[in-house]
Image 1 (cartoon, rainbow, N blue to C red):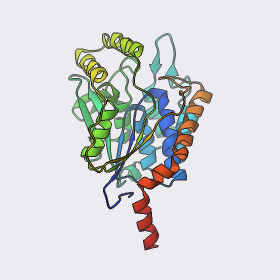
Image 2: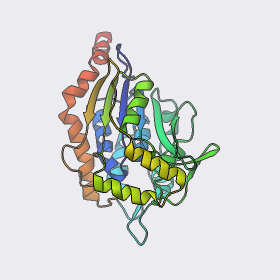
Image 3: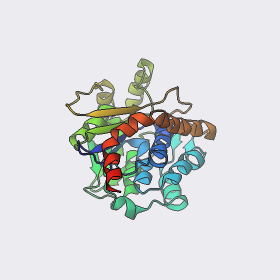
Length: 289
């Protein structure tokens, strides 16, 4: 574990469809280049959830393959006549057949994870954690099931859920990590907040949703993302240093690969800052060798 004497460490990754290639590259850099592999807490939303599970299983090479080889394809992304993200293909073919997730390693990972999903009836958020041990494949399916781009909903236990991005923002993810005890936070974001035009489009989109989901979307658009930081919290933000080439459902491999590489490079550019968050732990390890 990367726990330090001053408190637990958390990694947070936000959603954003194919923009999540950026956070995927950042996670690979954290693991392979900085050797940060077992944070105390991990909070992941939407398209970043699958990467989180591969990260917890130690399958760093598979994270890259998922994003740069398999996801940017016609098999996963359909542009027309009706746009769609084929989430079932991602789960049942890529994650189960091509690159099977080591479920045992995920189950016994010392990291406490949290994944937001949206209740399809009430529009309320629920954070799934390893306390309840639901199948990671189904948690990922629910967390990435974007309404209108995914035909259906996903049952977890006795209720049905969809993409958690509809009822949460980055502030909620950070608050969840702090509530779980995090004192050191690495937050990886894939994009900026929606513009005024973007918000207007989302409101029109919300008119096509069920009342509960529409309420959740509007609440998310209107909520403030400001954080009231408790004392003693240290924070490192990793975000794109230039405009990402990817959008919600880009399928051009070169764009997705560029976003992946940018995430990796941006982590390495902040290497000293990130390593400073783990300095106490590394000094302890060095003293015990």
